[in-house]
Amino acid sequence: MKPTLEEGPKLQASFYRCPGCSSPSIGITELFRGAAASPLASAARSQDVWLPHPTGGHVYDDVPNPIASAADEAHQCHEIGAHRGSIILARAVIEATCKDKGAEGRNLLQRIDALHEMGLVGNQVRQEADEIKDSGNEMAHGDFHVEATAQDSEEILAFMGEVLGEVYQRPARVAARRAERQKRKNAKKSDGA
Image (cartoon, rainbow, N blue to C red; front, side, top):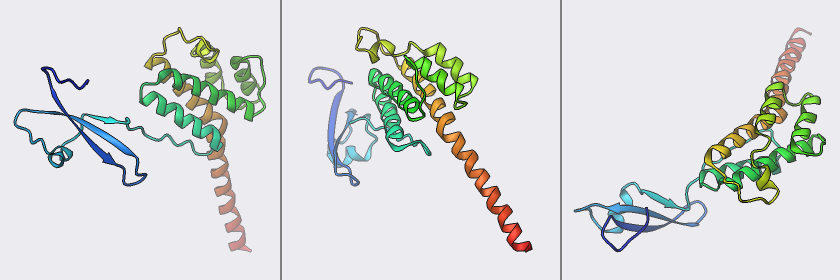
């Protein structure tokens, strides 16, 4: 929706300030015939467009903070339509995960193979890595002539989530359950002693 003074929809922009962070935002809505034009009346209606675009946070529990933060940022890029940024960041998150775990290789696929050989990712993630190995590869190396689509972005984000899940999150969940079982076992021993 583009504001225009010519014939077509009449738009109203309202300025707001976030009560949490005090940052400004703009709500743009179409004015309909007979609609009240006062800012208070239009604020009560749902806005058609918000600037900046709202993004949802993606929390990656049990993932080291610098990696989790970059993963969340990759999702934020996708949500505002910055697919090139999303793809490059998601690949960087996977690279950082490999580096964090000491998985080495000449390229990303070889580093994911190393994660597989270390037992940190399963066969399915390894196979998917081979299927999407070229996704964003050109962009990661400065070749921006390749189109970055929403579908490309969604695929690499999903793959990034799988890698983070297998490398960090699943082992943490298993360890937490194991610790809880051990705690109950110790409690039974102390009750029986």
